[in-house]
Image (tube, rainbow, N blue to C red; front, side, top):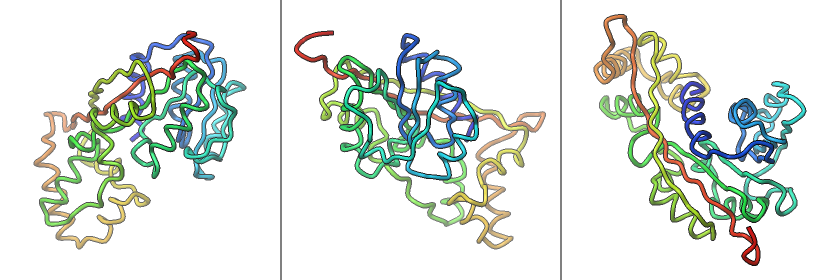
Amino acid sequence: MGSWSRKAGTIFLEWLATPSDLRWLDIGCGTGAFTELVLSTQSPAAIVGIDPAASQIDYARRRQLGTRADFHLSDAEQLSFHSGSFDVVASALVMTFIRDRPRALAEMVRVCRPGGRVASYVWDLSGGGNPGWPLARALREVGIDPAPLPGLETSSLTALGSLFERAGLDDIRLRTIDVSVTFADLEDYWQSQTPAFSPQGRVIAALSVETRAKLIDTVRALLPAERDGSITYAARANAIASRVPPLNGMP
């Protein structure tokens, strides 16, 4: 997943086109991958990453990303920062996983300064554009229903726009982000998509040898290899950018 998120994140940040020396908040930072991307491309004055998973925050802290990055254990629905603490509040591929998205977005708006930017991007789950689509389709073709994707109803451009409009945000912009990743061969793809700790990995581990072989053949048919054995396919994310309304008409 790292290759997908880095490619999508790079396009997302180029599109935002923020000035340097801003204060950033990374909502749902996980292991700090998006935080690191902001540090390397945006020259922020500082960036704080928050995540509700202690193991993720511990890992992010061990990355030692320098004095401009800080990580906190926090829920997006109840942020501990003062109002107006940040210039940019962004969430990378996590909005669909948040249980109470309107409340989390209200908190994102609160901690962003008036005139600051609130932005997000998510995989296009409703349009079937997430990177896991080949394996999910193959599972269905062999008679297995994959686990429902969280936040599917919020992943379209229309739904994102409506969510941000209801939060009172201004200057809303929307776009799709198309990215492709190449795998060395089917085995490389398979290992990347079926780690033992993932929901799909656990489902596949429980299959019989015969069903697993049928599943692999189905994936092979969905993702034909090039002459050198490599496999390339595309995924799509939906992105949204906005501004917090200024106070009393001031910029």
